[in-house]
Length: 279
Ligand SMILES: [Zn+2]
Image (cartoon, rainbow, N blue to C red; front, top):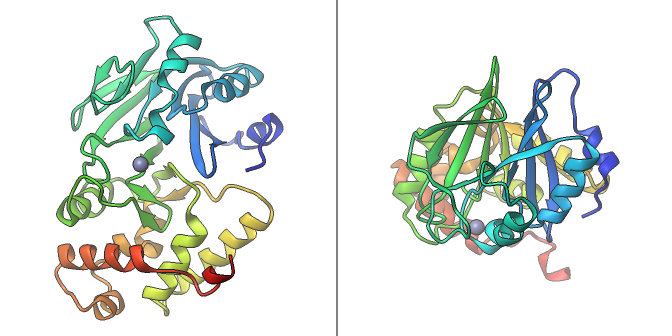
């Protein structure tokens, strides 16, 4: 994915004090820099390409003060040894929820609170994609963001590699859904368009899905990130957060939230967009 420091700088909003800069990595991953506009001490989220993060941080005059790792998969945590070499200062802590993360300093549990760069942060344990998956909820004044790794994507969710539909139901529709609707959502991958194609397939009359797909395809054409969404928006467009929708329940022939979640995941795993065979 095309990316430059100039593009990173464009993501800085003068209207915001709590800044989150998406830094594309590998094929379709996102790393992030999260910081307070005044203090400029940034946490690097899932810095799988630490040199790229360092370059962008330097160009933006940010000092790195922490690393927040969402889960142990290599495309998120694979850069932690190199990160530690680039940032040997022991006061720069590496946070995560899984002992399989290299160089982990602070092993977080659900609802652990901590601060980095003057920003209050809460660890939300969201086991299912992996057992030790953590989402990070960060607040400053009346602004809030959540870094959701491979648990919640825009209009989708991660595969259930180490957990159950029951766990993902709790993660999405109890833990994350209880955050304020204006919480900005920053996921671990740019999967928005393919997720919305599935959302449209499973809930064809959802006008919010149709509008968001148009937006997402437009972003793809301009090579722009689709992040962030908000928790409130996800409740309108994300089938996995719409398990009570009558249309979705009919499509998957299930009613209870856990059954709908399981059937949705199965259907998504098998779903191929109409033009898939041409690619
Ligand atoms: Zn993963």
